[in-house]
Image (cartoon, rainbow, N blue to C red; front, side, top):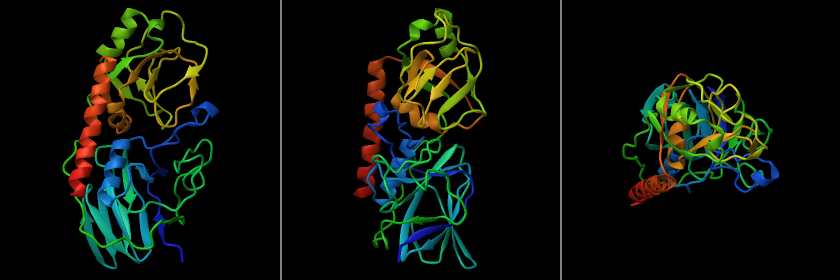
Length: 316
């Protein structure tokens, strides 16, 4: 018998995501993957998975799942959990693993201050990889659960029929508050903007638009002034590329970004800040700080050291 998590109620948007579909951009295939890869990696560490194991990414409110397996170990980052066993209920805070048994139900709560939360399952999901990844790319209709968000009645197949017995893990406090400032480096078409336009980007406060999605974060605020027009020959995009179309309002390209783009890119978000950016809800406000490439590289090294230290602490 296949061991599964049965979706009793879908909640908000739920997508299977890992660290993305690397190496496919030259074929025009978007990377996809988790909006907040740091939270994904912490959740996986709590249940003993490798960093890149696919987990459930949920927006705003998580699903209710029924355990149809001997046992399963899960952990959430970004939202609390509630375990339902008959009339009994018990709360499990975000950042702690928990062992569940057949017949119990798991309700993933509302995202706490962030846009997305992650539910990791020990062993991961027994879903077919598409081009080397389980990540869901909704616009193309592949990956995850048939290339779409979860719906009531879905059965998520588990890689493990039963979770091994061991002590549960708790992650030390990690600051998941959305940022007030995001670090950037100058982009490949920074010369397409006036000096005033470049200053506007770094001296202004921007608001996340309700038109944002996993492809791009659209920003509302002061207009960034072009000097060479707003059309370029389409070229490659990077995670966190900041495009500025003709209306002068920046768009930060995210996980499902297209592989190429025809708007000039004034800057790129430092990779160390991309996960924090992915936590921002529509209506959130923040600003940009310009740093050097060397400073961005150092920030990423420091982030990786923190994650490695956390995993070592959890596994000791």
